[in-house]
Image (tube, rainbow, N blue to C red):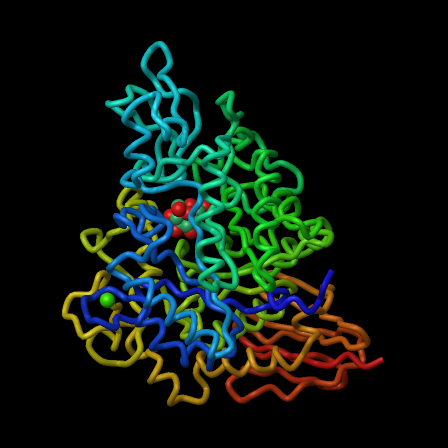
Length: 540
Ligand code: TEU
Ligand code: CA
């Protein structure tokens, strides 16, 4: 394997364009807004950006419901704006990864509009149509991730169609070679436009069982599986037949063959709601399928360092030559400062989680606003726009709370827009955490991110090194990252109590930049005051 591949160990900054920066002041962030803020992203010290969908869309799922794969939605700008964004990113030395939502289209996509017209037009087999059971009920027990059966009745075709997500997101039929060829053409459209890679939405959902067999009920967590959320009724089915089908492997190989014609491009596949280790390994081993995969293992759990160690050791033991990618926040889950209880303790706790994440082996995705330590925004029911949240309120509050606009300054609408009406409100509690406020404070979370990202770049151990765990309890973690002849020791304390570790190693501590909450060494004991980290060279 080629350790010089830029994407191995890259830090990818996820931009959710609707909420990043509103350049034309209509209340919704846009591509020119991202371009205007490119300098900010580059200054963080990340390697790449991942742009959430900006394609033509009715916005039922805010862009994850695409009605034209090869154009920019007017809300976000034009193809020229996209080209300008790529140019600006490349000028700043940043790679650009775009989201590809290939599993499903919008129900307003011309392909679906045609498909539902009849049983015998040239698009009639492009989606997954099935007759009702004799009693009129749905074809099988498959569930939608967003609640209810994965089947929707269509009164024109008088059949059900499959939708793993919203009923306005019909699943494409990947068993049809025309669909696959056309999809690969749309992917190539963006490669020709100069993108450096793709984040593949729901990369384990593309194929389904053509016999439409019922999924077995889940009785216990299958061995080796991690990241299965049993609080979600969807997880009570073993998804043997609705996704992660073996046929997907051949498709991922074709996709990879296409990307290999465009040097230095990459893919990061999202593996959702599944036995993620097995799938992550399958999809990334052998250097002929996906480059990297990420799972929800760190996105949906509590802040347990024991869980982190268990997840990493399980992955390390099974991944072989595959390559992982990790994140603790994205546009689908509660913001990490809230989920992991950093907001009421102190900024230092957010910094410790950041050091933990950026020291793991793999590539890393950061989600916009994470570098500010933003807590989840608090919204009333009537302010919600995410259908997932509206469906499950109040048990689950949906995804709007992590999607509110970036606070750039402590002024109206957080400097995100001049518009009085932004698509989601800016949380008042975010204003004191705005970018300009934190830039002026040398001990801010933002400075800690910049400092550690620069430190990371200077230490190949943190990018390419093997990982070995030395100690864990619920709130403490210690491990080494070793590359060639050099080894770094990292210890962190996410609790409000002082911890002392005795690693029995000959350690020489790194002087950490001022914004990072540092512990210290005393007689080769590692002293970790509340919310602190120690990074040290391991001497022979
Ligand atoms: O998410 C897929 C996925 O598994 C999510 O359903 C996740 O479990 C859920 O959002 C709960 O947190 C991707 C996108 O990231 C998401 O925004 C889209 O809504 C979804 O696909 C459908 O395209
Ligand atoms: Ca706008």
